[in-house]
Image (cartoon, rainbow, N blue to C red; front, top):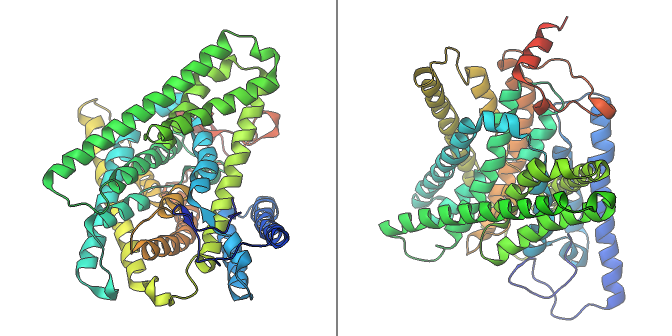
Length: 488
């Protein structure tokens, strides 16, 4: 969402504005141009680019990469143009960012989850989502803190700031992973583990970020570690319980009422129940994102089959459409923010640290490696010795895909927008610059290296019913292997 106001607000991520109130006619004029630019960028990234890439079957580039570059180009033009009103309009308010853009992404991720394959691989998913995220967040935070202690580039970061920074860099991107993998028929087990890990990883990283933010500016003791762990477990558990409770309540309402005869009202109630759960959880100082995620999972598992056919289709496509718009909107902003967010009065070197970006990139790659390969070997060891499984649960080709599929996405961008303190601008710009470079590298790596390294996991895609793409998660491993054998 664009920033409609000009007043300074502690929740507004804006550049310094004029102290005089804008003329209403001018405000309407400049806000119209701001919204026009955003809509044109979304049309470019969603319609023309996505359509062209799919028609030409170009799979090495995703529309989100184009959205970033398009946003950077427009942001540069706005930055160089005289006046500041449009640039001020194109900044975000923190509250609108979390309340309007993130919920559709998380809700759609939970709503699209297929429980059968998810719970079949639940142990592996939990291992990567909790232990993997912890290793990544703490590893990046410690490495960045060590670099800060060296005193290079005049950085002075506290341990809490570094760990908070690490928690944002541990958030992967389930929506982009889903978009990439839906173009292929991959082994359902591999798809489920990657998608499930990304899904729960977002929830874990958000709660970790919120927990660490509570210690910002305070002294850290040994007891603070146990206190933080307690807050994390309590917040995650209560938030999950709230989401399940709201989902079950709506499921019971749909089951014991005649709402199926009124699909318009039914569709509205399903969407409103999910968002009510989100805002209630936030209002009780819990994690609304975690509640929304599990509310979506519960609605799909219990309420979906009691809905009318029209409501099933409506909710499915509305949630998917809103998620795609929000995702692309965030990456358009990611490009715009490179030139519109930094204050005009400050030098670029005051908030952009090139060496710090490189160190961050090395730390993320190293910790991702440490989170994927050792944990994969531990899972293989457990399956082999505890369950007597002869074949490896996660062969090396799967491990390589897990490593390369760790794209940093919209959730991390949203968390980075909430950095606080004197170093907030430096950490924010570093994260955004890192994500821009990483998305381009990993996009190519997953397409060009990941699939060939996975031993030919790609097979020819088929069409599902109603002319849509085949949902990979509806396949069983046996079906996938049979289809693979039948390939000419």
